[in-house]
Length: 597
Image (cartoon, rainbow, N blue to C red; front, side):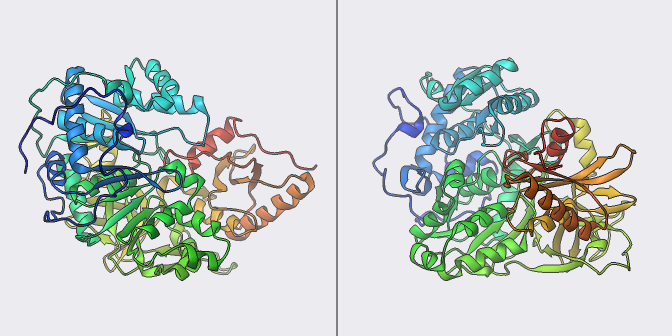
């Protein structure tokens, strides 16, 4: 490994790192080099950065249309990170201080994250504003995470300076744009030496199931997960990644940034907002470079791409996906119907269904817990819905089944068990709580011992998810807290939501199901549905269709509310937040559309 050295002296920067040009501005970093591949087997992430910087590989940032606009070799990133580490220390940042970073996809965030690691501080990646919610909502969200992480400083891109500084002021946290921060002096100092059991960074959950909580991840836990991920997916010498995933979410941060450094391979980035506007630019980028072999997405990413294609002739002429060997799936419930639609849409471009690599993970285990071995693709089991919910079957109704996706096998040294309500392990095909144990399970929730003790028991992590094992493979059923219990019977909200999606005119994410209390004190299912129908009379018909569909699934009546498009709240990673939808509905902040009397 490289020892400490003084980064080469540069003239003071008057703009952010992203604005600087390099000699290789339009030549992407290579896929291969003479440096031997080490699969994340380093003592600390500092060592991983040092080693990656000896290669010619690195990060490649693309514009809205997927055109290369900034090349950032790991060697340059390391130099910038060390200079930034000097700036952090000169600004009074000490080891174990938190440094909040707005995680915009670009060189500035990459260098600042690594700078915090070199300085012994704990980087805290925080989200950019999304299209879900307004300015005030973003400021409030940011303020809550700042309150929890208690950072010494918030550093942000100047484009969102008003909102970021407002959130900082709200919590009494000093804040500065990274353009201004780059003007600070860089006096040379001795950087602290990291240890494997030191905290490397804080990862905030997206807030889909609980109040956002900071997960404290050690160097050892991070690198063990990255090693297991590389081995399980057989990441090779010449693999290259393409990613549009946000760097404040664990799948983007760990899977498509930290893993690439620790396993030394190049990546092509598209910003998340660019993907949202032009999702097919993602597939254009995969097609353009012959080395692009690895890319990941939640289900909705594959879904929106399949919906955007107008004809198979367009697919064959525009895309070449034949070299895409690992199409990772994760971050939300994996829908086999959506995956099949993607295969149907892009098989003419050479995409193979065997490329799909479902996985299961969570930030509390760094990233991955289980991964499907390469080449096995999407495998499903049909399970009776009554067995999924743990309720006796109503013999007066025909059996209904749900396709449950196989999420693969545990990573090396990761143990997975299914726990029953009595705390004892359950056998194959018996549904219960998913528990895991291994070196990459989190250290703790930051400054939240109660939440830590609730989910960490004798080294085992209670994930809060329900599932079952079969022949060593894990199948995920749903979140325990999302279960709707009506008259003693259990119903999974996604079963209701997916049923409504089968009606014409609905997209993935248009429906939120949860339980509410009626005026008589009884609980009943409630379904909020995005409505694009203007005629109040037609809305009545639509509501009746939805009621009939839900009745066919649950055997009971429900409350159906039609709401304007884009009303249902999302987490920072883009997933539907049922808990927040319920809260907003009950508080009157979600106002249903009018329908004919």
